[in-house]
Image (cartoon, rainbow, N blue to C red; front, top):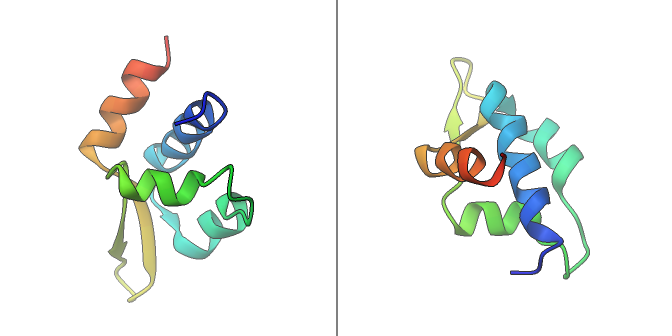
Length: 76
C-alpha cells in the first residue's frame, strides 16, 4: 500500500475508535472516488473497521481489535 494511504488509514481508524460513528457521517468524511486513495475500502479489506446495527437500527462504524492494534503501532 502506498505511503500516502497508511497515515490516512490510521486517521480513519482513530476517528471511529474514539467513539462509534454513524455510517453516513463516516462516508461523508471518508468516501473518495480517487482510485489511488481507497481509504475506506482498504480499512474494510484489512478488517480495521466494522459496521454494526445501533439500538435504533441505524448502521454504526467502529474500530475492530485489529484496527485498535493498527493505530497503536502506527502512532508513536
